[in-house]
Image (cartoon, rainbow over all chains, first blue to last red; front, side, top):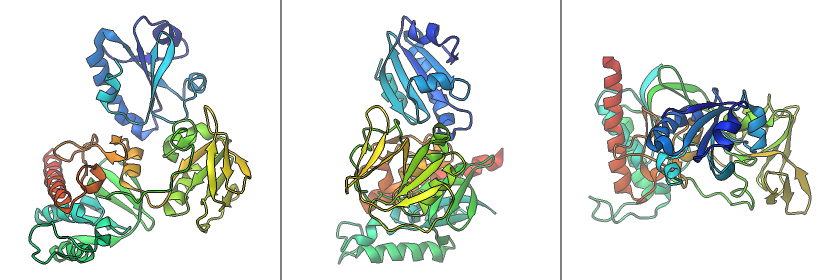
Length: 102
Length: 290
């Protein structure tokens, strides 16, 4: 499965109300490290398949959500289960460290 | 001018890499600044080929001479930033910018900085290690840069146009020479960084405090992991993650020696340096074919 583009419009449906855990990558186009995280997120999405929703959220276009979740450093990857944040990764993170959460 | 290989660090890993790249006719530059841990070793008795042992300082100096004798350019300049460009990488020192097709990070193990209470706990919640990545979140806010060297000033420069008020916190060290309208310098020793879910204030040892929205950590000179994090190179417990070819997750950037963790020994640094050098040669050659 490829990653889902998240926005304020679909965040509730894709992440909060998701029946499977969700992984959200908070990023920006101008952020160098975020570009390195992008291919890792694609690999994670492939590896997890239907087991989880893997989404990317552009903080420039969705500042409200970045603020709501207290994101102050990018990339930040949040793991949601039952609509709640259960794990936070700050900075470029190893694929396996993230997959271990599933 | 475009270099084929720029090596940051002149210890056994960096020098060893340069011996291979230079001999393969790759235009090689070594940039180094801080003293190597090797220099501090009084005597090394467990490295191959020295029947009476050798002092760390002598081994270190001889290594640099060996590289220079082969024609490697070696410059003592402090690297404050590594960035990506269309054709490769740009390495900025306090003196000038250099371009290179590949980069080998061989910066050793950074001298441990005094740990300030609260920093670890508030990482990603107002404590940041990258002004260019996270400055965005502090538009019109009050931020501090922790440090007093060129690296701290480089981070301050990145924040000048974004933050409303910047305080350089030297934590008891001497004040750097730096002047800008919205920058203050505070030399008081720090007791702790306070805040629950996000940074709220800096408390000093004299029991005074400053309200703060964010703190950018930039103590000492930029270490290998700090440069790596800004580029998006994977790091783990303050070491750079590499595979058996010394490749990082960014094609064209390699890391070797103490900064990759594991055995902190000359033999390991030499092996990794050689591997990184050979891989860099292959990378440059494969790119020039395309």
